[in-house]
Image 1 (spheres, helix red, strand yellow):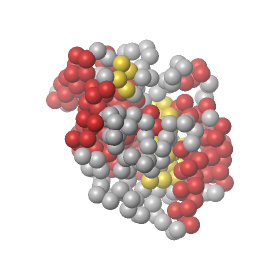
Image 2 (cartoon, helix red, strand yellow):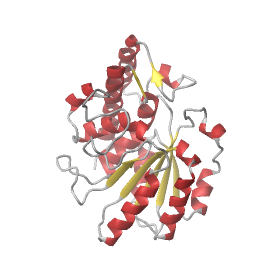
Image 3 (cartoon, helix red, strand yellow):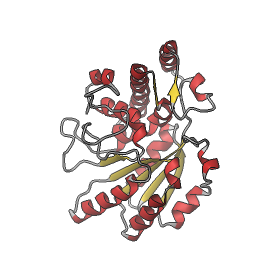
Image 4 (cartoon, helix red, strand yellow):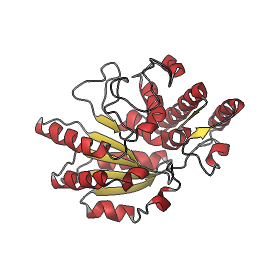
Length: 280
């Protein structure tokens, strides 16, 4: 468990690692990585049980990256957690790398599932949580997903199944950045009132500013405390490109390509804000 200042450092380094990986390929899902870094910092720096040198430790909490295109953010979190060496970020997206551009469990230590086809993570998480309960394990299953996955019927079928089975060891994290490949998520398929929807499916619901570390910590702590036999969902409102002003302001930032000098400019903005003690 980390204190507040340590979590700030973790979130900063996760953002910086992601930008460095983006620079390797000159493109990537950087907007999501910058926006979701605080949630990942709390997951791996505060809430989860894991052993960096033993990724398959049976007692670990499971973190499922359903939105496989967030892999660049997840790799940054795994580097920060000590599960992957920092030197490997230079191989991101390259042939024979353990860090492919979309998450694949067969390649990467700490990757619990191969994601990318949206709507698959929560059904898998339900099965894992049910199996762990049968084993009398105290481990939690965290399913991380995008707001675009709210369009998928499989997500809501799994939500019903989790509530039916009373999977209190399951926590779903939804990144609500209102952006997907076809435009704003809320315009592709409206999903509000989202908290009410999840509650009506039998879940314990929290909605927080996903870029407020204290709020995210409190939400994780609440999700790990007894809530009867309900599964838990944390709806995280985040800002795409958080911490890099010229990326925050882009109208379309689902997949970002920037000119070569802009990668160092982005890192400069991040470093400057961190040095000055300004939250990203």
